[in-house]
Image 1: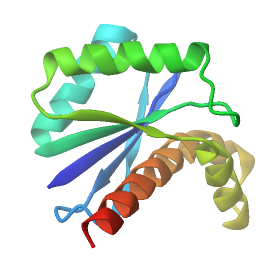
Image 2: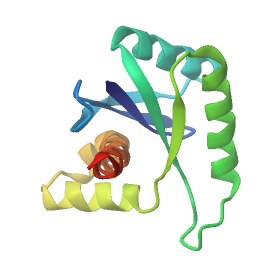
Image 3: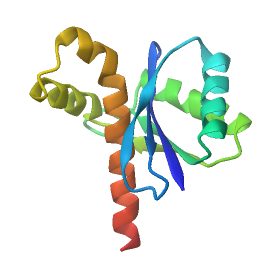
Image 4: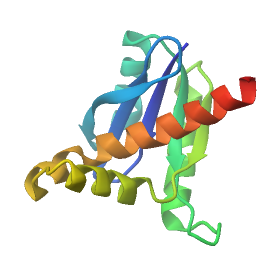
Length: 140
């Protein structure tokens, strides 16, 4: 089964897609947000085109486990997506994913201007890969 990982943001949505076996996550792209319903329809089209079996969306938590305004926006996005797609949609704790993505890009000597363009994709890969690793460990 192929998975779609999403790093949700109000300006951009970072996207990652797994291989067909659901083992390895890879970058798919970044969508510039066009607003609620339009974003949902664009995600739905990707799900259909890439034959996605499950969607994993990063869920922002504070370091103490609490949630804030951004988490409520993600919850609304998840609820909207669940209404229009037939595949399961799950959230996954995304704490430190953007920081990890930034560090990876800095270590890879990616310039600041380029980092801004790809950080959401890399964060989506990290979110999805963490989810996949957790699922695969549970199977073993």
